[in-house]
Image 1 (cartoon, rainbow over the protein chains, first blue to last red):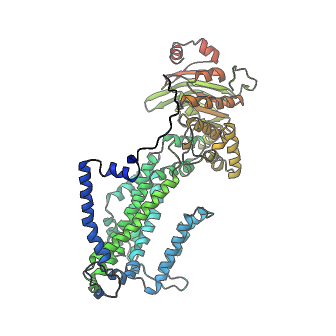
Image 2: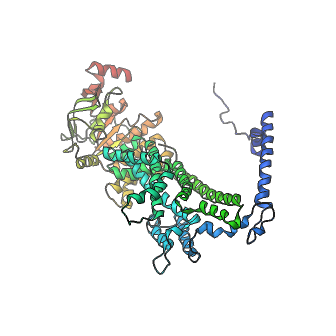
Image 3: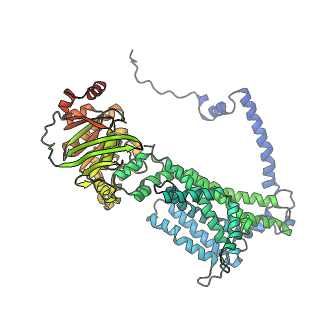
Length: 366
Length: 257
């Protein structure tokens, strides 16, 4: 039988299937038990939201100089405002705040330029961000050149220290991780086993041990009189530790690339490094963007562990702030503030990675 | 267009051997996959290799550009012996283009970038010049309009034609085809075969592993039948299909025809 009426028109869907009403019906009120659950959930949300909003906004105090200003019974944001510089810059001399601000302003400018499509010569800009910029930032932070006052790394602190630690960790752990992952997949037995030993060693110890070893044990092994900056030791510890994790994430991506891609690259005459750089890694890294960013986020939060070796990162300065006798009793405000700052950075990284995944999506697999 | 006979003037075959395989053996661990392969391919010759799956036909052609390593015997491609010397391997891979069953286009690059990549990075050609060559070959396989698309946006037949263009950009003197139409939907096989026929008419030396017997009959100078790692029978297509000698060949032909 042949259908004579070969082109039936598309009819609009019934109104109860689409739009807000359709969504509500199918998701929240589809059955009696579902309706009850919806109402219960609304009640629980109400129980949580109302006191939170009251504490954070309605009953809170925002302006003032000391704890005497906090009389409403809600959150005392005066504390955060009063100690804000401590949280941002640690014990960095106040006259040098502009140097830190300038360093981060340059970074933000570079990152914005790198993400604007029309900017020409992106490759050079990226190379500068990765090589020239860290040098500039280092001299801005530590001084000693052009008449800038020298500031010891032990006085760095607060959010700026957190960002320095995690920035260095992120920028250094990815390339080292890639090299380790390639090493682990290598045909050469020595390279392969060295990579495996490195990765398994660093993944097998807790970061807190690494930091502790770097600050307490390492000086014991070094010859008398060699001093080695504490911050630098912590950085190296974090980078080596995170690059082992990164290596395994990247290896996951490498494993997902079909053998045909390697073969096609070989057949075209590309050598090992060229086929890795041009064919395999761009695809493998794209596949594991979620895993890479996951590691970055974990790294960002792991930097809080430097408190055990006496570095003052954001969390430590917040704790120091509410242990101050003038502000005793405002730990909750401090922790909420620290959590908010960490969340903003982690959430931005997460959104950026999703954005990047979308941008790099090039139609469906092979 | 489809040529109907093999004595086409454009398809001349010289006596000079461009590929010479002598007593080649290959093992996968303990498993002896290729046994005493002897094959001379003359310049401009078009050879179809057929045989049941697992017979070693793909492995054999993959040995020619060192995607697989042979353990015994000699492979000489255009005067260069294929051995562990990386320079020799490079030189041979310059001469030999390969088209795969699953296309193996690079999904993160556009069609044109797929074509230009090796010209730019292996031949060190300026980008503009490489793109001109890329477009020339995309026109030859009749998909210049897809140049800016990504492989994932093309049909299987179009992807395989891009893969052919990508190989041709390197101006190889030999083309290897490893079951180029096996992964395609039936309606796309013809467009790929037409491209290959056009290539054959231009005098390219071709080694084609395929089950397309129609292609073998019309295009090949010689058909090789392999089974269990050996070349069982080789002949010109007419004799091969009409008067197969070996029982295994007869059985194979009866199963696929």
